[in-house]
Image 1 (tube, rainbow, N blue to C red):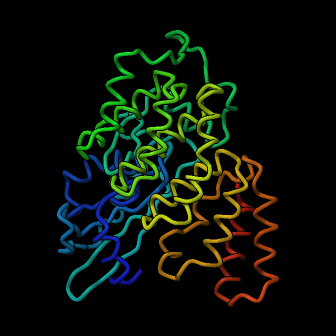
Image 2 (cartoon, rainbow, N blue to C red):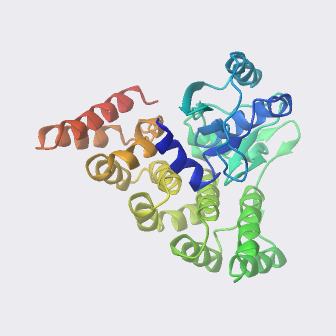
Amino acid sequence: MNFDDLHKLIQNGEDATVEFKQEVSQDVLQGLSTDLAALANAHGGLIIFGVTKAKDPAGCSIQGKEKEQISQQARNCQPPVEINFEQVAFGQRQFLLVKVSQGRVVHSDLERRFPVRIGDTTGYLDILGILTVLQQRGFIPAEQATFVSSTGEFRRTELPQAERLALLDHLRSSDPLIVTEGVRDLSLMAHRFEVLTDDEIAVTIRSLLKSKEIAEDVRRGLLFALNGLQGWGVDAERSQIEAFVPVFADLATGSTSVETARAAFVLLVSLRSAEAIRVISEWVTQSSDERYKILQPASILSNVRYYGLDSGLRRAMYKVLQAPFSEEIKRRASVILESVRQSG
């Protein structure tokens, strides 16, 4: 990555897959296992050292020990989080990029909590949240989403009327801040209540997903909540989400936010939708070099075999190889094929 690529990322600000840190300080290192586990438990991402929260690319001090200090925090997670480093220089300014891979399981931080990245914030997974991630990654069949532990049976219940009315009021608010908080409430409620059995809530969420007025981190928060519901929601909720497939496909191919596009694609995969294959084909054949670099589709194909999409993806990529596309596009198709072969 060169500085121009990095600068564009910085200007987009923090979101579900990008976080800024000014220095590799002791204060930052103290909480870094949480940041690393949160990204790994969501979709993976990038921690950029040398950037302030105000998006100022000031650079940071790199004296040689920083990579080992960060690697130690990755090892403090259980199981350890997989990371890679890249350094970018611009004049006298130095930037350290920590690339966090999406985990194949669920990672805890040094405090043995299970953090997860939600938009540009960090939340913590409860038992149902952990179950959701494990189900999405192929360890637990969907029908086992209700289970018994030493503290009793965990079941979601019907959404109380007062909570329902408040949620609808917040999601429909004209105040962007109220909508943002409403989406965060939805993510928490979804672990406890059957929220998408309500047609009004489903219609409201669909409208928000399609709205040009909401912030992209809010839209991604909705996609994250829906991904969880798809994994362990009741049949009525899954049916509602399946009806959203055209919306997800439009976001995956048409959103100006790469992070939103990736989140929508992940949902299409978890729904076992053939639209996921069409999206990858469009990304491979129609994306500019700049957009494709940021999309990194090969990094989000780890579960396609589990969801039964591997054969369709292979066929689609062989069609690209056989067509009169440029060598660069054929190279992209070859990389996708290798990722599909390695998928779980």
